[in-house]
Length: 418
Ligand SMILES: Cc1ncc(C[n+]2csc(CCOP(=O)(O)OP(=O)(O)O)c2C)c(N)n1
Ligand SMILES: [Mg+2]
Image (cartoon, rainbow, N blue to C red; front, side, top):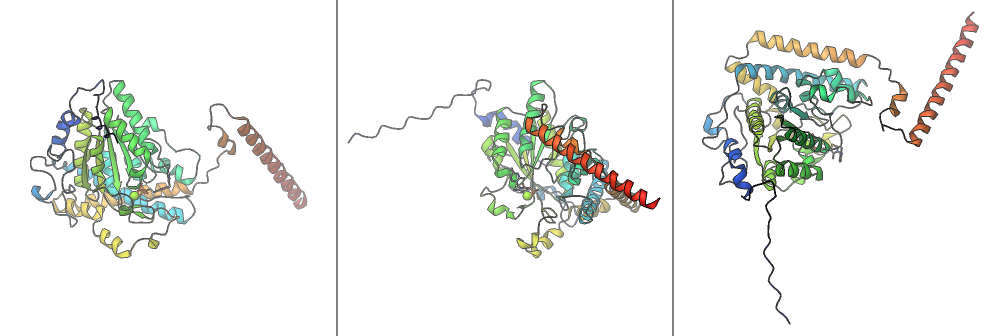
């Protein structure tokens, strides 16, 4: 029998537009700035980055999880106070919406109760011309970016449109099909780069979404094309009833970045201070052309997936209680009060702002909306298909028959009264 021929060595041709060095050489500056050593080969720092402990005390630099020399600067007092206000308003809106759903004024609401620090930091790290691509759970981030609460909630009320103009606010429509928004984000970043613009794009997704094919395609394309995208993964430990351990065998979601040749970092997703610091640095690096990057925020979905879910069927109460002790709002409040940034007056003003926002939201959700049924057909295709035309005519006929029936009933009743 003939000897098997030796397997020829694989030949890797360098992509035409890149120098023939290894990907490691090309991205090394990003690792150094992002707290990742070359020795670790793009791996995230060994621990999650945390700057404030759950009880509100500021950690020593050596305890913050960074490699020596890669520490994150503390955000300014003004920035922290602004973020804290958005955090308190975000918590109030989350809880208001859950009540509105129970009252039948909203159809569905995926609450980010417990994840508000991630929401606020995602919006506040971006510049005016940057773009954000949120998921269905990121309403508080959308609001913090400047979309009015009632416009943000239009989608969840059950309207056919998203409620706000994505171009005006530079916020994509909140995406329900998992992970499709990452591809849109990468497309926008690609276009910006081709035009020579310096926009940064924040692409948001959950832990479950990292198992989708679109996640791979978005990260790979962004890394190969060196696009200014931050993939911001909120790991809230669950994808509906699927816990993280059944979702991935990776050591962390930030480790997924390595395979694409990009740097990743893990951050305590209930620590507002650390989130602002890490995301700000990520935005700066991307702006300087050292993206893409991945940031995994480790947090917890405190409530059910949506009002249609019963979380007690798949997780223990003790686990929820454990995370309650790490609450992002209480932690930020304790820290800011201890360092004198937040006093009683500021606290009272912020509590009032949150109540006012909730009251405006209640008022707008309690208004009866009267959508025109024919709008259902208006924006599906630029040219309607014959089937759509047929359905539209069918509905129009049905509605006019109904209107005639009501008018007749009304005039009979009026005749009897007279
Ligand atoms: C393409 C696609 N597949 C499945 C679903 C159904 N689905 C809705 S939410 C969800 C879980 C997502 O979990 P995760 O990404 O962790 O986000 P979270 O809800 O925890 O914020 C699934 C599977 C969907 N919306 N889209
Ligand atoms: Mg999740």
